[in-house]
Length: 433
Image (cartoon, rainbow, N blue to C red; front, side, top):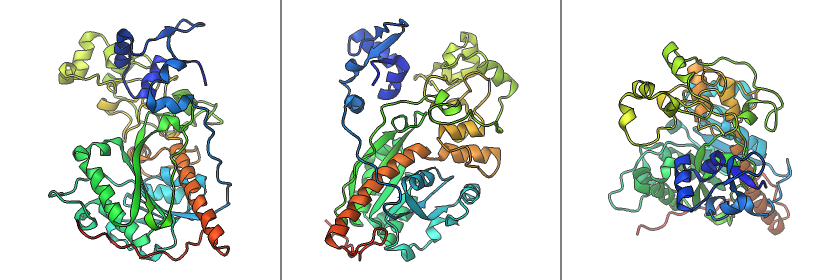
């Protein structure tokens, strides 16, 4: 573990702004010092130990032993699969993909292009019957949208979730009865409808016979992803199976945009050339004035006013607007389009948005993973994906959970074969309260 962290690194680690760090410096809560070699303002590692959310970075606890590749055959099914970021990560972790459902035609074409043998079912999830997979899938995953429910002051049940895509996810869980179910979503699900939406989801899965691990927001930068993306994960363990789940062990090394786009720690070559969007003339003129790591406040004041228009007078930093990414920091969270005014992502050296392959690298897709459809569709597919390396780390944690289950089953039943589930108990919904 290194002894010093830059201001940008600490802002990323704690999910706060540099302005907040400056206030802390003045108040004495966290004081920056001068680096003994380059004289830059930095923070000492020992001063960061006070923050619980990053305390693991300073611990010497060993990582849990990985499950040997091929030791167990565990099968997965995914709803709302998109372009395959989560599925690819789970495949790398050792899962055998049984079914992927996605309604977007281009995303399905992407899945079939890269994995011709995967069972990709295109269409509306509500039209699918999952009962044939009961007892044949250990893991069911899905990145369902966080639509609100109608509560009426009651404990939310399975039938109350009708009309939402979460209901379709829950219906698949009910019909398949996997050992583990995993939902992933944006971090905003935590506060959606003042937290009632997430509570409702937990209530539904509880009714279906699943114990819910306290939901957690995973920061991609701790899981070999050069991007400040955060995803919420909801893990359900089938109550009759006695499962124990441990979250993926965070990595202590943070990767930057340079690691994403250049030959080095993450990739063996520089980013391959690929198509990409371009800025119109006026925007290119504006973005050319922004330094790496800078944003609209680096413009002359009159240009700030003309570019920002009414937003200039609003509160908030609006740090994504006219933003040029620095080589030495993780990229901001990618969106579905690389040149939206509110969420600008400009190349560090060249005055242009990131190309398709650069976008894919930042999401840790391998260079041989191709994307189907128009340029706009490709950006959208990549921007919506779960970063592959984050998905792989999550997959390894899930594999460890299922491997321990299989070892227990083998001890109690010498004839048990990993990958073939034992007879499953009937799950009975609890009586209304």
